[in-house]
Length: 115
Image 1 (cartoon, rainbow, N blue to C red):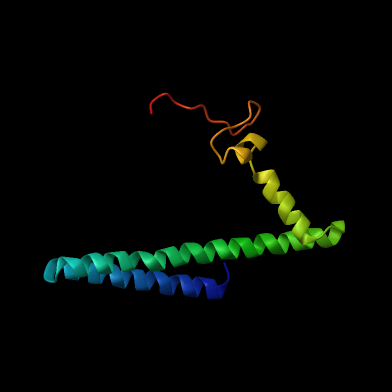
Image 2 (image 1 turned 180 degrees about the vertical axis):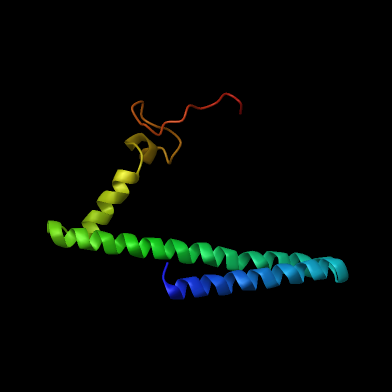
């Protein structure tokens, strides 16, 4: 995490804390709808912190793939596609929209009969 991302995250979390405190005050002294509105608004900066950290992780991954692509002679896009396909599950999972797995798939989870 670089300095600007840390500062931005701190600002987001401070804003979220302020909105949560306002929601508590509204719950005690104001209308209920305003408390619900401020409580929901206090979650938005938390979502922004998660989003920023995911974007930072993706940038690091792309930079790493570009470095590896320079050494291997392959394009960065090829390495990204290969990494995504390697992280994916079995072929039956792809064709069944994530509802079924091959018998040899290591990520296969047995279905329970408790529907």
